[in-house]
Image 1 (cartoon, helix red, strand yellow):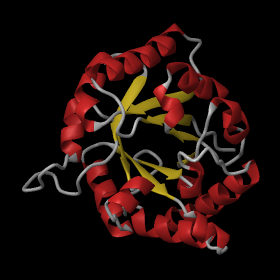
Image 2 (image 1 turned 45 degrees about the vertical axis):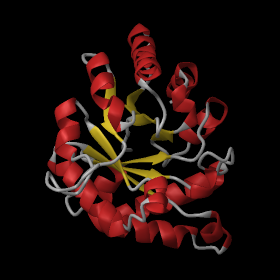
Image 3 (image 1 turned 90 degrees about the horizontal axis):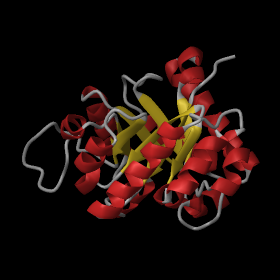
Image 4 (image 1 turned 90 degrees about the vertical axis):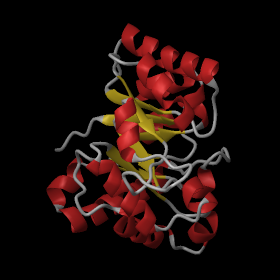
Length: 252
């Protein structure tokens, strides 16, 4: 049986100024250092304005830092965008791409997400590729079809278990307080892993981590993280409180 080390990733979204962002990052790094160490990797993805500050503050700790997005190009005339190379230069090890909020707010297609994930990997970052269905798609019985299509369209050609993480985020459960039932989450995660096996082969698919990203909190984390195909969480609101984020990590 393949054992996948769980990843608990905090997506701070557009939250945090210097003082509170620094306090949050240091708080997580301190509890992580104080131990006992959880049986998972821990990652925080602050807004771009705080990446350098947070990366410097937690340097040398067991807490990894990532970006929430990156551009597909390495440099050039792309005002307001951030390259994957720039994130790596600041100390990032990961980049989230294709989050549902990016897909919705910025009309990002699967092809755009794939290009960004490819750029992240080329810069030495682990790409966290997000996929997930809307409530209308779930109600129409299209959940598995949508996730398979987004996975095939968004997965970089050179994806491996070492440079890629998939995050399944049911769009209807993000920030709404609603959460997929364990059965719903496992069904989709298992379907994603089966699709990965068809694309990459059974061996790599068995080692590639698939995170759940729909309102994971301390009170439901243990049940979700115990599911056979759930390899961690992409945490939103609960990642903004040290105690909540740490409690989720300990549930792993």
